[in-house]
Amino acid sequence: MLNFELYNPVNYVFGKGQIAKIKDLVPQKSKILITYGGGSIFKNGVHDQVKKALKDFEVIEFGGIEPNPHFETLMKAVAIIREQKIDFILAVGGGSVIDGTKFISAAVNYDGDAADILRKRILFKDVTKVVPFGTVLTLPATGSEMNSGAVVTIAATQEKLTLGGSALFPKFSIVDPTVITSLPKRQLQNGVVDAFTHVMEQYLTYTHDAILQDRLAESILQTLIEIGPDVVENPNDYKLASNFVWCATMALNGLIQKGVPTDWATHMIGHELTALYNIDHARTLAIIGPNLYKVMFETKKEKLAQYGKRVWNLSGTEDEIAANAIEKTVSFFHTLGMKTKLSENTTDFTKTADFIINRFEERGWKALGEKQNITPEKVRKIVELSY
Ligand code: NZQ
Ligand code: ZN
Image 1 (cartoon, helix red, strand yellow):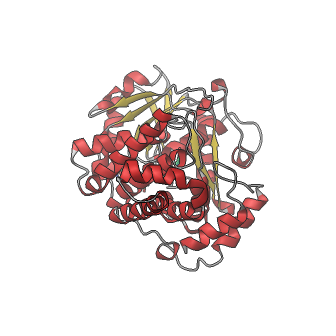
Image 2 (cartoon, protein in one colour; image 1 turned 180 degrees about the vertical axis):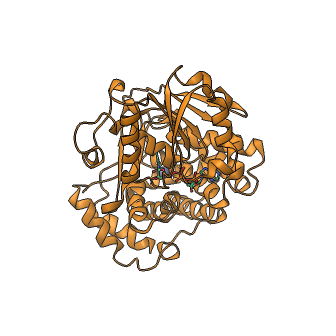
Image 3 (cartoon, rainbow, N blue to C red; image 1 turned 60 degrees about the horizontal axis):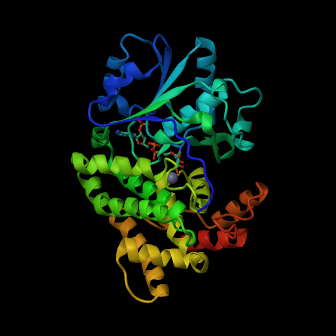
């Protein structure tokens, strides 16, 4: 097992009716900025619950954070916080609102061009330099409610870039599984696939001796396979909803990644598809993931076979199991309603591979993946196989 540090200070508050607890979780007498997205919280009653809980606080609201949040929009909130002397931010929404809020939190006291936070990937480790924030999660998918990472798009240049650091964990996250009842089916599908792929990025690498981490990862995958197709159809079923939400958090709260190698190339390539064509994040993963496993078959086949046996109960030779496990994954995505080809998600895609390779080379990304052997040529193959 590799050495690791496990640090996660998020006060994770789970269950029905928990939004009312916000009043005890935010710092007393603080002036709060509520951040939200395109307005779903007004239709499903979440905004009402939040406002009721905060009735004794001075509150300002900032809406309009778009899916795949834009740097340009977030900088408007940064200006409001500076002008209004806000002490605390409450993100109410999905991964985009929470990620956007992490960026806002970091940018308020950042000296210099805030785009550098993304372009130079500045790590934020000093909690006294960021604005504290909490979250009310409305879309289980990203794990952003319990991690310190975020992804922000600079719209002007179509760059989708990451930021993070230990100072950017939420102080608390309220996770009420009943919020998923208002999610469109498309977003439920996205949530299952995003969570599933997060586990795969941290599991489907090479065989190692971290037995518990493998079992944890496999149990999340098995649970998502068991409940995923049903929760997409019946988000009102609390048993399904609560297990789904917890899986999505556990998939990317840092736990299963400790002491093991990780890949993340599917995400890095997928982010480019969102930046270029505005394809939903999870849909880019369903397009790229299985093709990456195919192109990197020799590197990943031992782990693919383990995944095939333990998660899908497959039998045959090691190579057969490994290959079938990829097909099982694709079928699972199809069952969830995903379209796994780029051509099914956008038109005019023929220059995508060239574009992505140029971008990665400009950024010096010449070796991705757990063995640093996903070269630009491999990226080309993966993307072209995805057409
Ligand atoms: O904006 P509103 O009106 O709220 O509507 C949203 C949005 O249109 C809607 N929605 C959210 N909760 C709802 C709801 N509609 C009805 N009822 C509810 N309860 O869903 C739409 C999508 O929301 P968004 O926040 O964009 O989705 P998601 O949570 O999938 O977040 C995606 C973003 O997270 C990043 C992605 O790259 C993408 O930018 N990621 C963040 C990660 C992290 N911080 O660790 C890791 C992930 O891999 C991912 O990259
Ligand atoms: Zn993801």
